[in-house]
Image (cartoon, rainbow, N blue to C red; front, side, top):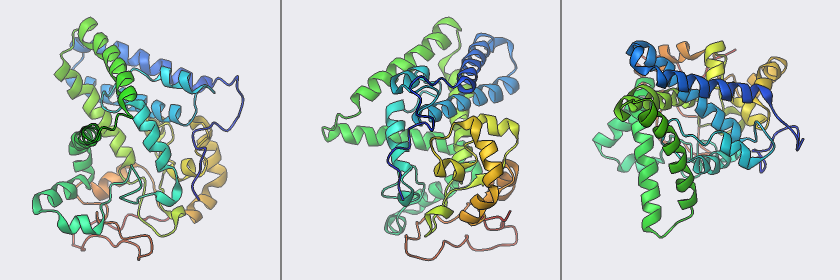
Length: 328
C-alpha cells in the first residue's frame, strides 16, 4: 500500500536537529571546498574518485532532506542542500518525483513510477534498432555509468521543455532556485578556484551522478508482489556511507522516515524478515553486482505487467551471469 507521508521524520520533534547528518553535510562541503581549491595540485587519478564521491554523497544528503532530515523544517532542509554540486536536477523536482516513487504499488511501472527504467511492451515493440541498442546498453552497469548521466540529463531537459511548450509553468520556481544553487557552486569553482567548467564536469559532476546511478542500477525489479520489488545490498563501510545506507533499499521503502544512521541497526534486527518479504532480492555488495552485470543487462527492459509472470533473464549463454535474484 502506498504511503502518503513518506517525507516525515520518525521523531515528530519540532526542535529536532540530527547531528550525524549535519556533520556529514559539513564534511561534504569541506571536502568539496578543499578538492576544488587544490584541484591544480592533485593528480587526475586522485581528483576524479574523490570529486565523484563528494558529489554523490551530497546527492545522498539531498535524498535525506527529501525525507525530512536533518531538521523538522522543510525550508531549512532545502536550504542546507541548495548548492547543487552535480548541477543537473532542481531539488524541488527531485522531491516531487521521489515522493511519488515511494507509493509502493507504483514501483517499476513505466507509466506511473517516475524513477522506473522499464518501458511498456508497446513502446519497446515500436522502438527502432538504434534506440533499442542504446537502452540495452544503459541496462548494463557499464552503460549505466558511462551513458546514464547524459541520458538522464537529456530526458530531464526534454520533459521540461515539452512542459513549457504546453504552457505548464509549475516548475519555473524550482528552476529559479536551482539556478541560484548552480550559481553558488560555479562562482566558487570557476570564479574563486579557477577550475575550468569542463574540468569540473569531467571530474566532479558527471562521475558523481554516475555513482548515484550505480546505487539505483538495480534498486527495483518488476514483480507482482510489491514487497519483492526493492533490493538489499549489504555493502561495505565506504559504499554504505556514500549512499547513506540507502543501499538497504527495501528497509528504506518499508520505513522511509528512518534517518540513515539508524538503518544498519534496524537492518540487523529485521534482516530475516526483510529478506523473506522481498523474496531474497539481495547482493553482498557492489563488486558482486559489477561481476554479474558490468557488460550484461540485468533484465529485459519491457515491463512484464503487474499481473503477468515474473520477468525472465535475457537468453542464456555460456558467459551469461546468473539471474539477479540471489539468496541470503
